[in-house]
Image (tube, rainbow, N blue to C red; front, side, top):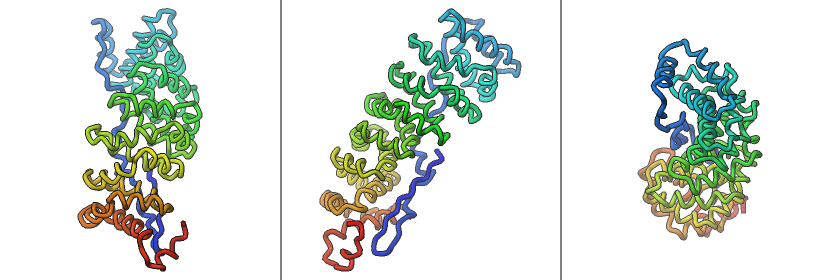
Length: 353
């Protein structure tokens, strides 16, 4: 992802605005690539046709025929055509442009609203595979893909939900689509997938939410949808392999006062302190970033964090962490010591209280 979030902290005239999350940090998210399902059983003739199409430059006629079959009166013909287009787009990147130019996007979008679960799944996943091509993203959005994808996120099979989340992520990489996706009802559904999905579903939901929540109104929607509860739970479970991803999503949300309040209410402070103590270097660093946002303008939260025993692991991090981790730990230690300090200079300099 191409997102950099920067947070500003001031203490005794010092500016900690370079405490930021860089693009390297967002490597915590694995990309939602083309569908990760296995290949599908096909007849020998279908297999031969697909192999020839994938191996040669002469697939235009086949693609055009498959696009025509998408609008067949036969559901089975539609399924075969959608499946083959899905695989052609998965296995050969240049086919993604050729399929779109052949007019496949609108009929594939129509399939997403099918009452047949398998047909819907093929339609969703074909759209996902087409969305991997930057040239197709704007066309997909302008052709009306967002609302059907959100519907699939609500009523689709588990695979359809996961691939719909990935497709929405791809479309959200165009800044102008983020608001439209949020207003189409995607955020609560992604929060639900984050809470109830399998591991892949949780990963895909967290990645999409990380992208979408760079827009303030989507942050508000996520907090209102109760996102802090699953985020805190995933961060507390080191066996979930979701600590990094959920923490990065939380760091994006924590700029909102209501998000910080929800974080505290859901028991996030002890979880964050534990991560600073026993997490990986990256986990420790992002936990400190969140705690800095939490403590920056609240004496109450500073006191809660200090009482949770945060200072000893922060001191250790300030001595042994990376350069960025040390800087963040030092900034947080200074903040935590302020409410307990009798230094009038320090107390008077706190313009945020």
